[in-house]
Image (cartoon, rainbow, N blue to C red; front, side):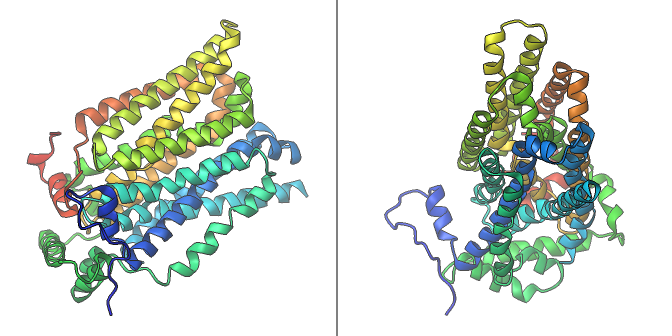
Length: 454
């Protein structure tokens, strides 16, 4: 007997709500797929959040210099770059010196895993979720990255860096066995010519009583349309045709913006910011973790209500204010003005930044990037977007401590400038994708006559 929805919506409900909508698609295969993607995001968050609360302990125990720890903090992004190089193809196909070396190798391998999953996870969730719930479900899955980093921020105040690394293994033990039970993406099945399996997979995801005929036909028709439009070039460089220029610009910019706007610096070296401004690290990490999670939860609730574009604008504006306020707090401290209030302003600015980042910039850029590319270039686009984000992240992560030594005020003023320009970019160029099917979105982005923001 085929699986029906595990959770049934109330028949008395007069209008579809987010919870009832999710319950209607909560079949066992869908729940398993969501769990795997969420655990993957959780692991990514744990890894990203690991270096911030452990900085002092690692540098003290291993007697590392600023340069050594900057290499350790940034080598995660080198791994992400390597993972980014292969994620697109996978999307389309399926003594002290020794101690430091082992430490860096472990972080490098973590980065490779993040580089692969950062794009594959959002793509998979957007391709198996109904259009009216795609933003909320995908955002909820990516919310676990914030939960992971926030949890490690808090645990890092009471657990040693070695024990914290061991705790990070637990989510992997959940993911591996579940991978054998999750369904394939129906859009990928259509792309590789397995049309007969598309309806079967959609029925398993939506429930045996669901009418999936229109959705299945739309997927098959659009896939056939894309194949008919192919001009013989099916390689990586097909992505750089003129018709994909707009979508490529949007994807690359949205992924790179939060990194160039200082996210890696804030995330990996929060301890440096707190120490330099006189904020209690333990109190700062705990409050930061709570605020970041609240921002993520709020963003998940609003993404299919207010839309992607509106949340991105609010998030980017908040990130700008956070960076600007951090810069002001360092300026006041350097000039010994308002000494009593400097640490309070610094803490508030960090909280504003992380709350704003959690609201939208943590997840929506990846959701939009997974929505806007047709199946024939999705793998190549994932590689390019991932590379842009990871290289930007590496530049900031490696140079951050050196930039602080140069000028703390100037460092965050640069981040504020980038986030301000990002706000203008989103306002002028990024269209809304809420409520549209993936096929409608991809047609919009590849049609030059429709590339203006509504």
